Length: 346
Image (cartoon, rainbow, N blue to C red; front, top):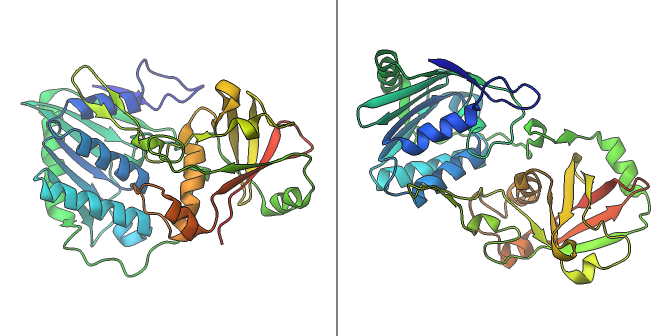
């Protein structure tokens, strides 16, 4: 057995990261058992997409979500879980359970391949895997020894049986948590005081660019429809639903003052700060730096909160029409390395 860590810089403790270890075990497993405290709607959506695109892998997966039923779900989390549960039941590939009468805060994972079992026990909720943007540093004990790993596998099954209720049989929560994007939990994102945001957006900008949101398949805000990563065994890791890369026309990028092939910080009209970059021919690619999902969470999150978009749904012109805006506004500030982003609905 060995400890595995998130390995975020500068704390790279082990040769392999926790996320890589989890994904390797997950991809090779026939059966997966998970008992976790918390989930995120995007991790469930990404898991759903993986299972859907890999029908010949992972024959059965059982998931217990231990904290949300009593502490509260967002509507997005609950809807994503119900959708995944229905998919698993209809395809005879598993089920989703909630802890209806007590809070379960454990983080237990078992991966069974033929008669071999690997187990992980430690601090990481399911939401820290599958394209996670979380800042929290996690560590878990990876157990390969057959007797102990199998004991954990058996204990997860007993836990699900003892405190789990099928999500389809538990009454729907009467109240859902109202929240925004929670980008403050993600790497490279900061929350900006609203007073500072108001002052910045009241100032006159020397440069102002209108970037239309294009709803084409497999690119722009629907980049998740593009081809995923496929390994030698044929296992596909689809692109995350929150991946976004705006393709900006040459008419816009050729204008005076446009940030050509640059990295810079942006502050959004709702108070988030993160790094973006322009790249590609004629600087046509506009994206969040290092991770496409930051910009994607900001854009799609606005649509979700407004009620125009459900997690996993393709963005169409009709959805943007319902939101009341199909333009991202990019404005300069007195600092050449700081820009303002706006995407307000009606």
